[in-house]
Length: 480
Ligand code: AMP
Ligand code: GLY
Image (cartoon, rainbow, N blue to C red):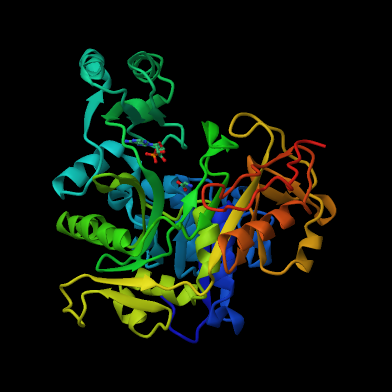
């Protein structure tokens, strides 16, 4: 890895709103401000070109046509002299990109294949939680050959269960069933009709929990935890949290019902046992642990773990923290997180109270300087099903007039004459910040109203559970 003073070459892997936000954050680092950083994105989007250069899929294919994508990207990183990589999407982590990059000396924010199992295999994650006493819903797992047993189990339950495909299923792998009949139907679809392919080779059938949800993300180098501000996303496509699940149609931070005592309980009952569990199993984990939590009557429980930053949670977490993200990520990648945080004014040590010893995991809270942030995702009409792309996006230049608003691109590309065109399901994120969520929300929607493309769709009610202010004055625009 490059030492201080040298040009740092940083690769952000992914091309969504999360990666654009990561690029923005990295470009504000002290070293970037002095021209000491070259940022690359693979494959990036029209927005990431504001912070650096994109390596397109075609360019990677012409650099090297042989081998898996992660192999080719690793070869390119060596050729280019990349010294730090931040990996966004779970599929790359599950495929072992972090292992490959580390093996050739690149520092990485993101776990290797073994650590990525906390997300890539729900059955593995549940067993891991059981082994380490981490609170989560009661469950059983079944493989494809056990259809009859799975049916019997579903019929024996007093309440309809949640059924989860074991493997990565792009957000489509979880069904919260409403009746035994529906649960039996889901079994049929996954095991017999093979609706999710290999991801459905094994199923987790678990009890349905009730409570409010919150996401708590931490950065870790395997020894130390840096707790990021909590966030909440809106997964459903429709207003009032209705309709199919998506990657996320909006998010906000903070989450007012997530109190300090509950955070402490999460740290002690969930995060520290997770960190210790990973270490005990010989998994060196450097990256993000994303705990999707439900605050039940019996205390906080894990709904799911992700092995990466959330999208769009990242778009509201990063703008709240005025950190030197490059320095922080470098510390994670080098395994020196505790050392770095000792000299970081935005970090407050939560645990242990004293200096601890090198064997005691340290827990730090990254203290936000910005009160609140709220992100609205503008998507292509039809998403999460099929949708058209290639429409010009108008009104982006006018966003510069707005204060305390950030624009993060997701599915966009640059067309002829430098026009920004839509290129995906989720197209743009407009993020408002402010003292309060209501202020952040008003700013985000003011920005949304200035942007326009032919088949746009967005939810008008992001943050409705936590903002008392009505959104009735906001006019959602579908199509044109
Ligand atoms: P996951 O992909 O595991 O986060 O699941 C997607 C969504 O399904 C979660 O955000 C929850 O709203 C819901 N969900 C998952 N597991 C459960 C559960 N055991 N009880 C209730 N809701 C759940
Ligand atoms: N927004 C949910 C996720 O990133 O998994």
